Length: 602
Image 1: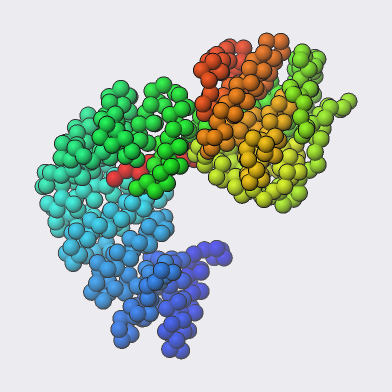
Image 2: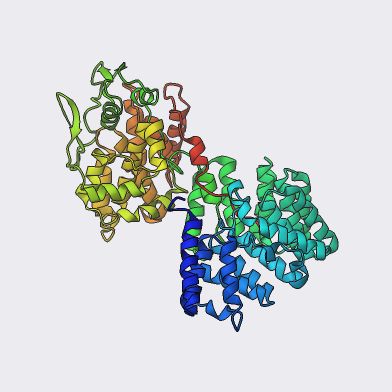
C-alpha cells in the first residue's frame, strides 16, 4: 500500500490509539482517533475504535473538547459520540462545520446520518439549518468530483422531506442543496412544494434558482417576480432578477430592474456590483469596471463575496489574463517550427528572439532590415535599458537575478488573475526583491515550475511563460519602495523607461503595471492615462512605416486603462479593427475559463 494512502495513515493512528487504550491513556487514545478520523472519516475500523472510547463512563464526549483551535478530526469524533449519546442534532451541527472547513471530505458519509430514523429525531428546522450551512460552504454548482462527499446530506434531505413533507423551510433548503449537486429536477419539485405549503420570498427565490439551473428562464423570472412582490424592499432579489434577465440576453430589461434597485438604495452592494457588470456588458466601457473596483475598495465589509468584477474580466486581454504575444515570430513558435527559416521584415522584439532561439534550437531567423524608425533603438532614452545590440543580436544589459528572486517569482507567476487589483495584491510577495533582481528577471526569465500550469505553459506556447515572468516582475516593481510619492518614485521612473525602451514584450508588461497602478490608486490615473495615450500614439505612428508586433497588445492595454481619453480609446479600437493588425490566437482559453469559481447563489 503506498505511503501516502489515507487508509495507511489512519491505520497507523488506530494502532497507536489501541496501544494507548490498552494502557489506559485515554487522552492520547483520543488524539490518535481524531487523527485517524481526519484521514479516513468513513473507515469502519475508525468508528469501531471510537466506539470503544464511547463505551467508557461518560460516553467519551469529554475526551474531544471544543475550543477555538479544535482539530477537525476531534470535532468530527465528538459529533459521532454525541449522536451515539442521543444528541444527533448537536452531532449534525459539528459535521456541517467540518464540511465548511473541508467541503471535499466525506465527513457525513456514515450510517447514523443516512439512516431514515434520524429525520424523526432531529427537528426539521435544524435539518434545514444544517443543509443551508452546507450550501453556504460549497460552490454552485458543485463540480462532479466533489459531489460524492456531500451525498450523505442529500440523503438526509430526502429522509427529512419524507417525514416532514410540508415543511416549507426544509423543502427550500433541500432544494438549494439538490440544485448544487446536479439534482435539478428534484430541486424544482421540492422548491415548488415549499412554495405551495407556505408562500414566501425566500421560497420563491429558491424556486427561481432551481428553474434557472434547469434553463427554464420564463418560470425563473416569474418566481423571482413573485419574490419581489413578497418583499419590495429586498434589493438582492432585484439583483437576482436582473442577473437572470442578463443571462437570457435581455440586457435592457436587466438594466431597468437594477436601476429600480439603485433608485431605492444607491449604495446597496448587490445592486451596485450587478449594475456595473451589466453596464459594462452593455457598452464595453472599462470605466464601469473601474468604478466597481473603487466601490469594492471603499466598501471592504460587504455582506458577502461578489464575483461580478472577476466575471467581467475573465478571459479578457490584460483585464484578466496575459495577452498572447503578437508578431510572425511568436506565431511561428506556436507552430513549432524548429529547424526551419522564419523571414521577418524587421528585427523582432528581443524577448521574442531569445525565446525562439531557446525553445526551437536550429530555427533560422532571417531579417530583411532594421526598419524605419530602427526597431533596435528605444523609443525614448532612459536610464534602465534591458537590452543592447551587437553583431549577434540583442543581449541582456542587466545581470541575471538571484536564485532566490527566480524561485519567488516562479511561485507567483501565472497567466491569469481575477482582475487588475487582485493581480496587484498577489504581487506583494515580490515586494522585498531589490531592483537589480526585478530587472534581471525581465531579461533572464527563469525556467517554468514543474507544476501542471508550468508544463502547460511551456508545452503549448513557450512565449507565454516568458510573458508571465515579465508581467509579474513588473507588478513586483509596483511594490518597490512604495514609501516614495508616485510622481518622483523609483517604480514610476523604471516602468516608464521600460515602456519607452526598445519595442519588446517588456514594454507591454511595464504598461500593464502602470495600468494596474491606475486601477488601485485613483490619484495616478491622469498620469497613467497620459502615458498610455502617448505610447499608443507612438506605436500607431510607427506602424505606418514598419510592423509593430506589440501594437495590438498596446491597444488592448489602452482599452483597459482607467480615465483614458475618448480619442485614444477610438484609436485603440480602430487599431484592433484593422486587418493589417492580426490578433494572436489564445492557446489557453479553456484553461483561463476555469480560473474563477461561479458566483454563489442562495
